[in-house]
Image (cartoon, rainbow, N blue to C red; front, side):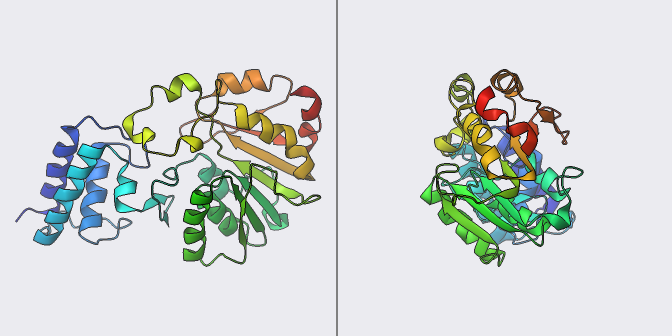
Length: 294
């Protein structure tokens, strides 16, 4: 019987032998092998494993099948296990939503300091919520806030509803089927609006690895320059922000396109782990100019 460590190294080699891409929360074959081995042995992925312990034979059967499916299907591992982790939060996922990953998660944990006063936040809006992961984290970060979480996809909202219920947040996280702001009640305003919208430009979309192609196209494709939805989010946000409110938008690797699209607006770029130009912020005062500038 192999030890846990030997089992992981064996799984890692199997993953390395396939043409796989890593970018869905686990960044390399070794990390995927460790997670898969823990998952199949029903061990907590949040705990350090006992590397020298014998790896159970029944778990080995499950692990062999899981690794084989990952190598053949090239789907993100989260779709095969139906779970994903983001800064210690666990979420249910399937092919109806993209696998949770976002620079915004780090900013939420930091309560968007120093841009807002956390205790004064009562109304939060997330656009393009997908699995609901960021809305759930926001509800945790801002204990006094009601969170409206919007998505155009009924399928995505079904996944989000499962996650919201799992966290017991049905009374505070409100899922809304809407094309961005369209279904937001007239006159409703927020202290904070944030979004990780579809922003991948058309050239990049054509070159995506199989793992990203397994995700919903609607959650990734952002038009020729990636800014189709971002323009609308910025253009209309001023109507839905309180006077001291802020808008925060993730645009990933599309810095150049964002700067060009919003060249007349004073974008503030927020420093997060792994990027200093992947997330921008605009204040309510900044956004008053949006109607004329965009």
